[in-house]
Image (cartoon, rainbow, N blue to C red; front, side, top):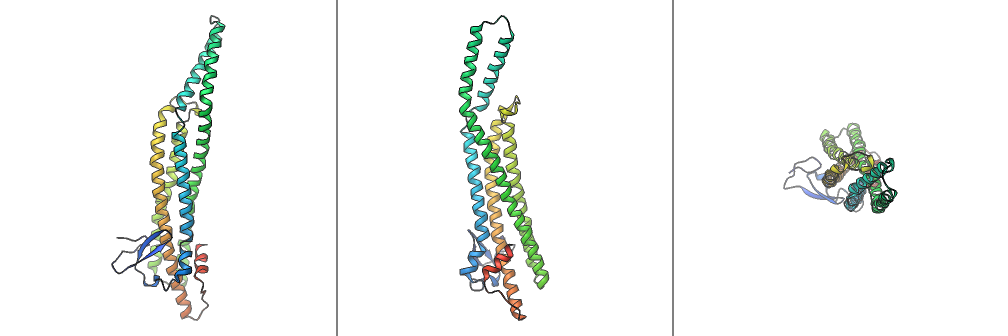
Length: 277
């Protein structure tokens, strides 16, 4: 089995909790004693906890938008009925042979149509605004993961080159970055796809076939939310695994600086914070 930090899992590996995830890792430098667990453990999980919180918040917003959309009702049918009544009224008013009583009855039907449509229109407005907001937040959260891996992989490369560390560490860091990018891309595309299908199903676009897009929009939304949740979960795992690599680099750098008689930061929390930034 391959652990998220890029190593093959063996029987002799110890398991380490990183944030809310659990990984197997074979590196002897990552024992609880060398990591100063009471301080470093919490710092290792900080970015993972922040991203996990953002991911959970995003999924909750997505579910709220889906539930709100399912509760709207048949907005398309009510809209098209009202438009048909308005078109009939226009034809009646243009004809000299139509009696005024018929026109009044038609106007009453239109008034009833507005009464039926008004509560639905409020629900649709809320659904659209929530959907747009949720799509933007989803893209932003995935962008955070992408930016994080770009920054930490560059930091890892610079430190490995500066201190002459094993190139395998850099390869593991780059492998994690490559694995994290596809889920982030899928998350962004899924959010855009849900929004696009929603726009296609909106009768406010004045297209004649918007009702045909309602069911596809619902299906894409449900599938998309599941895909986004899975991809965010994967990104959170990779972020947590990347902290293991960062901590290993910091421990190796500490040991090298001790061996060379250089100053060493003893607070692991400061080390991790500097690596994250």
